[in-house]
Amino acid sequence: MKHKILSFFSVFFFLSVSTWAQIGGRYAYSFLEKPISARVAALGGNQAAIDDGDINIGFVNPSLINASMNNKMSLAYVNFFSGINYGLAQYAHHFDKVGSFIASMQYIDYGRFDYADEAGNKNGTFGASDMALTIGWGRQLDSSFSIGANAKLIYSYYETYSSVGMAVDVAGTYKTKSGLEMSLVASNVGMQLKTFVPGQRNPLPFDLQYAISKRLEHVPFRFSLIYDHIEKWDLSYDNPANPSGGVDPITGEPIKQAMLTKLADNLMRHFIVGGEFYLGKNLVLRGGYNYRRRQEMKINDRIAMVGFSWGFGIKISRFQINYSRSTYHLQGSPNYFTIIASLDKFTK
Image (cartoon, rainbow, N blue to C red; front, top):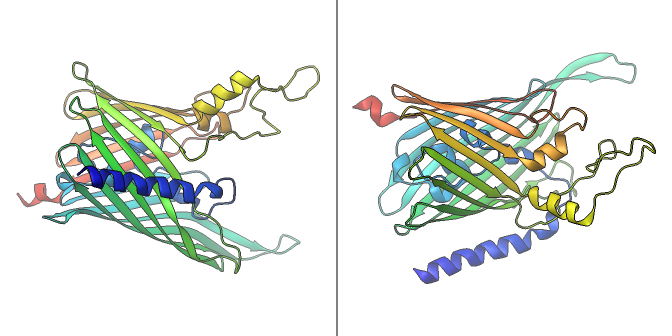
């Protein structure tokens, strides 16, 4: 067992080193980074280490795909900005001695766009969309350790340009006797098989994340913490129109951050915190805070709730329904809807 664990984390090290140089360039298939589950979005990010049989957690963390998800299905829909919509359909099945599997299809539709010449004369429309077919596998090695992987076939279509790619996610989860769950997940390791433009190959949005969660013993509350982008330290982005240190009201020049302040700012950009408060067996309230999203999307004179997210989950008859909103910008907040059902409950 010890040799299996060492070999597994050797794969993680190799993946993080081999993709180090990809950070900072233009990404292909950036839609893979977007949260799509209402529960995960409410917790502030696109990752979770919660082992409670939620098929949507298995989608982002394949090491948590297990037999408790057998014969479950899920549908998710996100009402994004400017008429952009995306969704996800999933089904899980368990096979003895092999492991548990999830088949998923996700898509994002950017809507219709007008063809127009230099004079603004319109002449027809065109579309743009992304989609990915994912097969996820998870296996419990013992009472404490589980592993899993996703294999993705990706297709993008923008007007007459198209691209095909493939990627994998690799994950491992360790659960302590006290109930603390810890996951290490390497997401979107892959490449473009067919590029949009010949000779211009872009990297995929690789991410190495460490996530922990624990449900408290005497309080109906679960906390969640994510350390995002382990493979890259500097996640700062300086927007000349909205500098992170603010603007000097007299000179109008950007104010440079002190070294310690900049260090703390960079560290906080890696952390995403969230929590769930359980009100009985059928209702859950959720909330999250994404510091990096807040720093990148805020407007200094009107910060508001940018970076915060909230939602709830409710169980009605045979269905689990989740809803959430994430405040990206003052212009609006995406709405996330997810419904989960166990087909076994319909056959009984």
